[in-house]
Length: 283
Image (tube, rainbow, N blue to C red; front, top):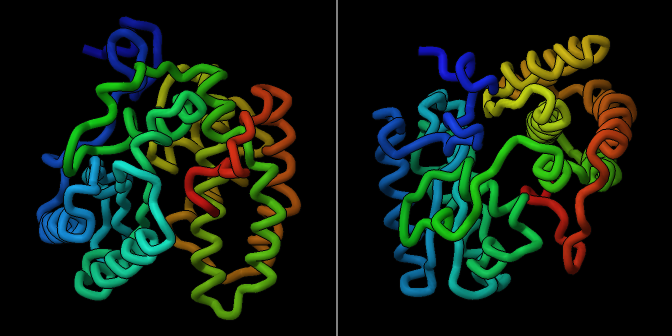
């Protein structure tokens, strides 16, 4: 049965119209199971009783990872605020996993406190991220303490309504990039961010959810066909990035500024966070 046809909403939602949690440990492909097992054991060894919970997110728990091409994404929640030493430990843990396992191409690890993840200010950003995009790996599942989420304008604003804040930092990072590897990494990062932001711009009209970048670009193109080709190209480059400063300039000077302005016009801007911590991925 086509549930979306019966309920009148798009894919990625449950029968009540809430965003369904994506991913599970059961969807992890065989090649990546040793990586996940090692990550679980090492996170626990590093933080012990200070660990509140840990999660996978991204392509590995969705079962869509590409051996040798996909990264391992982790969210680690501590019982107290992380310190600089904690962040250094996580960086070292990620580097060791990346070195040891050829199945992955890098490790991205977010480190936060339980208090921040469950704070009122983060309910529709980090809270949504935990409840809908993260797969429990260790400890208590904080989704139990969070609401259910619909693909509405409030969620759109609080997740991606801060693109304008990123653009000056992106320009600085492009200017500072020293080699092709850095440029390719920036291309992948910026392209992912732009495609995800473009999709959440139209998410309330679509009334659906997806984490597949190609599908996200296609959904956006339905509502902004004049920019659709640019988003399709960005989705492709998110998977196969290039070391091309002209492409990066098109993101920081053309597509990015237009998307930030349109987003603010449609949904408003993201509520400022204490201490300027207004971004989830620190880009």
